[in-house]
Picture (tube, rainbow, N blue to C red):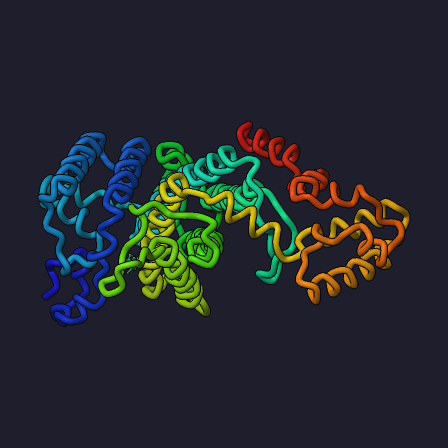
Length: 458
Ligand code: ARG
């Protein structure tokens, strides 16, 4: 008999042992214990207020649940696989402790709306955490930008030298990405901020419940408007993992640059020893494990996103047991994105830059070719003609083993008589960078202005 199960009434034979293990989620959903208890306390208070259960029962329930919370937190709670999930583990423990009153808690509620509530409560808290981790990383990037405000490095397209840029501008590019990530998290939080409890199993409940009261108790902005959707919706989790995937994508791009910049070929930066490891065979090695691992972990979070999308695909309304598979990808994404953001915040703050190497890199590769073309445009030439002329000068320099600043004025004249002595001042690294001063450009004055905007929270 399945009399030990809260749903055992209609069963004559016990659950197959392996089925019990196979269908249980307690091993992972025990992580929702505090949300489950919070939700149950609010539900019980509402049942009492509405006269659906006795006030004395509410008191016993609340006290019992608080006791269970302390037991779990002290590691004194025995989770049982036979009781399937966190919801039944807690409920059955409560009935064991306080008897009759405990058995009244589930009035007007189902595990379907209960689990939907628990995940929303959990993710709402985690989103706030994730956002604060994003802030930590933004601060580290900002510190790097401010303490290296004048540092010039090569900017790339196709990973080929393109134009000189400020290192601080490069740091601020990542800040823009992480600011968007924060706003995506905020967005996702706003849409998730609806109480699903009260949907019952799928159709609502026959009891005169007050959903708005529960929403208020639990800090939800509003209540969901359709009971079927309330128990079958996991969009909010998919949105969260999708926003987390974009964070990881950004971190993986930064990872790739840090890995590249740490090579002996680049030597633009050095990560502090605390964030690297050595090799068991090659004594000289200092490997950028942290960015490599974060780049790798990006794959996990993408996997979680595709996994959950696939779990939800084609599911008929309303709740289906398939949806129990939502939790592990959610938890794993939370852990991965928080861990990655945190370790990056610390690592970036401690990162050392190598101004000489960056400057040398910026000076190579005809990085100021566009500046010569722009110079000719200012002297009256159409841009396309200027581009052609500078292209020829580059080809000439390449075959003569020179870079543009090394061409003599006579050599320049052979390409255009519009070029005068002042060309040399136009193609220094500083001139190149500081000439780009429209909003969003790499000029120092722009970067400084953007730093102020970021600090002012704009
Ligand atoms: N452990 C279940 C889950 O995570 C809770 C909901 C179960 N509902 C049900 N009707 N079996 O999805």
